[in-house]
Image 1: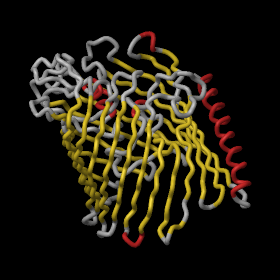
Image 2: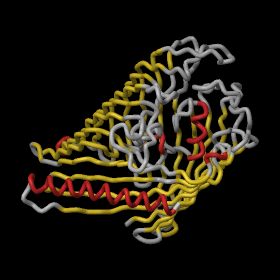
Image 3: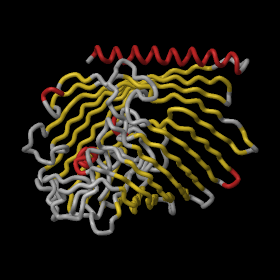
Image 4: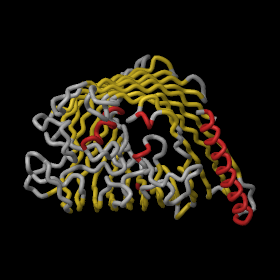
Length: 469
């Protein structure tokens, strides 16, 4: 393991040094001001273990998975002059598997290194309205990261970048910020920027090549309230190397409202409607009850999603907070409508709801990581902060399927005669030891409901340390 971490650090230093040299050359021609170089990095070590999440059956072979994952990142910010900044970051995450999907996969897994950020940011003043133009590989997140948060879902939390051009205008007179984003994601590692230390061309960042346009506006003209609206176009293009990709043109219109209507209260409400066309060979089933006949047809999409949270802040010595949550994500009805009603999470495919459920969901959606859909959940969470550097939270959710048929599988792991998915009980403890060192423990216990054939228990455990330097 130490050998691979040394390789990660060496690659990081070499790449960042190259970025620095290129930045210095550019600055001498672009500005007489001396460029400013800032270096930083972090190292995250996680132990993770889960049971039955991928098998949905605790009697199946290899139902337990546990491993160490070690993510090393190093980045540099170069300020050529006040309006122009260059940023580059390299990241690697080798793993060591104790229990994997099969014996051959156990042991060391060198995950190579990748440039997960490489962009230029320009921030001029334009007619009194601050303008920001960011071009290149960058992280982009909005709101609660419900549909815009992670551009690379297949590598977990290792990276979440987009290859994009983003223009942001802060219209202070209107108390509104406007964003226009054009992006293009290549599914395979190394298709756009070479991989560092590996030739693994088939490792994938997402399930298909993707092109997108995001129009996003955020307004704060109403007191204690933020109102967001967005229009998103996403084009999916499957590639021969990956069998789970879509061909689709999906349009999403949605909005989010967040506010503090009274001293102790906070809320967020977000909803979106989708339309367009999707060709999905893995999931276009006929209406037959046995779901064995597949067809590769392009169908009209008509889908809806809703997400809400209401929080009461006690504002006491322990900073007690109590929240109620509810979420609805439509699933494919498999009926005579001839439409595809599965809600597409776009770039919101992460463990936002639960770590273990994020791993279980792909079993019914053609192995697409964290493709939440066909879901209704309702629950509550409670958190306290006993000290300035300590927080503890506990969450309970009841999860249901909108349709009793899973959206994208014929697997016998689903009973097809119940809508109750099961329970989610989660506890998270966070501790900040110093300015540079922090830790986390996360545990989940999830009894499965009659939506599944085997009503077993899924479990998940994470222990993490993060050091920044």
